[in-house]
Image 1 (cartoon, rainbow, N blue to C red):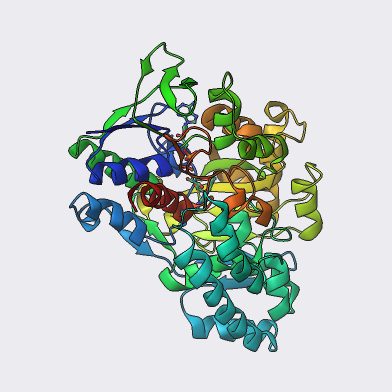
Image 2 (cartoon, rainbow, N blue to C red):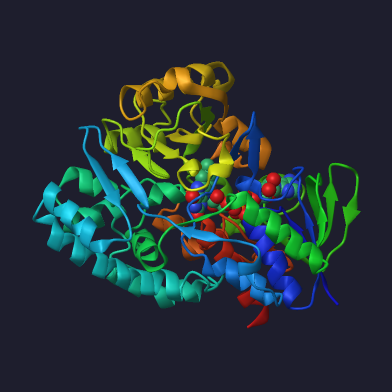
Length: 488
Ligand SMILES: Cc1cc2nc3c(=O)[nH]c(=O)nc-3n(C[C@H](O)[C@H](O)[C@H](O)COP(=O)(O)OP(=O)(O)OC[C@H]3O[C@@H](n4cnc5c(N)ncnc54)[C@H](O)[C@@H]3O)c2cc1C
């Protein structure tokens, strides 16, 4: 029986561990933190619970697959609660827009905002569905480690306008600036600027329409706990507090993995769920790396940083939907500041998570639990986050207080935050970026880190930094890609 060492216990690593186990391998996960989950950790403070990261579940079938691969039924352990609305937008002009599963209701609202955009929306959705068929159904689990795959699918990607941006795509169909914003923000959910991310990512819109948006009762971290129990039941070994120091290589394979705690292990197959740029900079510090990875290491554009403010509220704000997007005064210019200039502007936009809208277990009775996520420059912007984080947190609360959450400045309790510095220190992500490298066309598919290393043939990559990319559906599919490379 071959043995597999999975480095990193984020969702990419977990999915890969389960897929290898289902194929009959001896599998062990090595994770540097005290718990599994990576960005899907959980925090608990003063009776308030918080998922640390992902909360929007768009393709629950991918989790069902993992349980059934090991002969179990996810429904015995996890409840996916469909949400309505999916997102509530608050625009800077004071208007609102609910985006959700009731198509008629949404079209009526679009009609109120901009009558001519009703037809445009229907046409846009049709086109997004065509893009979804290629970009998700065909290519998300297709290995792109060989250039011929790019040559084979490249013309289709061009034909579908993949060289255009998501914002360009949306603007072709919709005229109202608020609707253009609402329907183009999706790349931000996977670390991209809507003005530079390939319009192939318009597939996210079709993905939401196909499977809706759900919330895991108990939080995404409940899913991690159930995945952990599933793995333990099926003899996948889990080693926490194992921080990789180095991969020891011979000519074209990884011979062993050395950890900072002094341990060294050998494995037939090594799967890295750690950020590929970290692997090629730190783990392979004394070894040669492929030219493809050298280019990425030197020139990659990293996704934006995230500032996440966690807080409880003594008062419930029932007008705040489970997923709320609070748009600031600027859009394109703000994104340029964040992504291109690495400049922390005075203004910002906020994604507000209110799990207590769906699950009261997240806070004491009559209270709310929140996180406010603000896209900010990654650590290429030279800011001392430890110095500025308190003031920045207050600015976020003040903006909410003035608009949709009057009184939150005094009602907010148990505040703490994560800055790009924490992303760097906790997940060891280069430049503390929220989502690994950005999903621009020249960093997608074959151009991204290949799922099988070009030089070390027993080294594979899963997770946000490799194909197909960030976001839960992406990282779960990356484990399928590795499975496909080895087993088909
Ligand atoms: C705040 C936030 C909100 C998000 N919201 C959503 C959402 O609603 N829906 C959605 O689909 N996606 C969302 N995402 C994106 C999604 O969470 C990520 O793309 C996904 O969880 C990444 O999984 P991963 O396995 O690639 O990486 P990670 O979760 O980062 O896991 C990598 C693991 O590797 C470990 N590791 C790193 N270095 C080492 C080392 N040297 N030795 C051992 N272990 C190591 C890390 O500790 C970590 O546990 C969100 C992300 C963030 C940050």
